[in-house]
Length: 398
Image 1 (tube, one colour):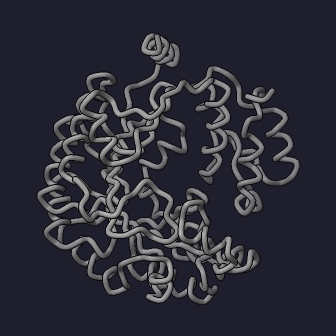
Image 2 (cartoon, rainbow, N blue to C red; image 1 turned 90 degrees about the horizontal axis):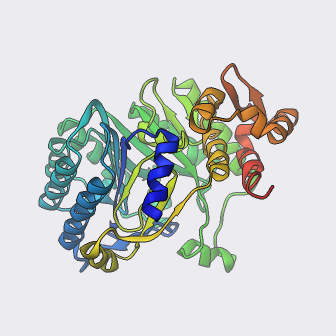
């Protein structure tokens, strides 16, 4: 019955076959103090069993929901680059085997930790089709890095980028963080300076969120986490936006900056509320308004795949919820949401469905009207959560 509903849903949507893939490698060398992702310390983990299970999930997924031409692949974690070269080769061969039809300009990204990338491994990645690497740098002060549980130091960052270039990578991104314990505005400014000196195509810069089930959350509850004041954190964000703009980077999303043409195409899939495969332990996928979550643990995932698709949960997203999601995630993109794109997805008019919410946000100066639809104002960028919250449950509750 669920399959029939799913089929009907796809027919109703006239949906295209998925063109984006997220793959999860859940292993890490250690757990960072702020991390609540589905990740496990590598020691004694059945890595090859997991990769065989992932290969099986790809096979089952393609049989049930055939792909379109693949435009973006993103490998996240954990730290995918903890795989040994032979494991990496096996994994990338699996991807190519089950998803052979790639667009000529595919974006194939892999997250990397600067402490886990040597030339041999990066060469295997490049030969296996990866053409974009996103390094989790976070800061350029060693004392801040050790204070958040990172295993690398700033020297590792430079060595890793040098190795990546030697291996043939010319499209790289780094992640930075602000609002870290003991971080000052001056420290952030220094990190931005050093990051910009690398002259990369893309930078993601996130504020620290203290999540439950992390060491930082425990410390926070005990009042042992020396976080910057809210006002200082706002100054950090303003500094980031200003410095990146001066350096010629386009802030195309609340936390992301790119040279023109180098925006993360995979993340745009999420922000445009488009379909994507989610493969691996704990991965989320979204196809034909059906959202699924996979089983999280490594061994439970490996066992589940032997029986079929390793689903923890799978549920249809109502049209109302999908419309809310469209606004909530779409407004993160600074060029805003398109009325035509909304109508194409839902066969309804955004101005009619969200008349009350849009009018309120425009009147409070948090949204601006554009030729295509709506976007965050300069003030709205700073108070984005207030805007997104306006759409949460706004239709489902009515």
